[in-house]
Length: 115
Image (cartoon, rainbow, N blue to C red; front, top):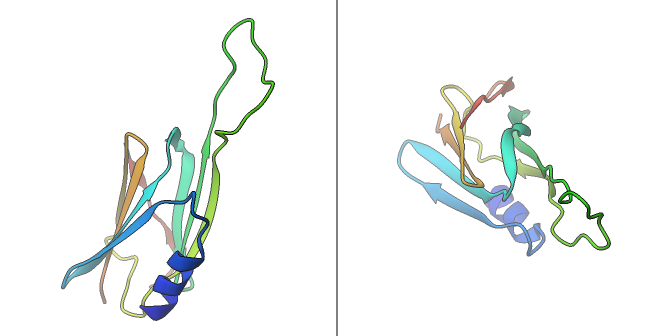
């Protein structure tokens, strides 16, 4: 779990992540405002949780971007604790909050996101 906590500390301040742990699972909660199920990818490979998310947005009709400070492209790799597994993993995306639940006990597979 130390590698996971160290990786969380190294994330930029703009990335908001919560880590929850129960007897049976880990739950990672990441803020991805404006991202959708179609623009978010979550996978576990080789003991690493990889999250890519992007926000797609357009300028209102008759306007063009002069300055853009609210861009979102998140590309995070978090080393998982040794007992985390992707079997029966689940992910959901609701109102810009991505929640990934990984049971304790990996092999690489894509995690489908509900939303």
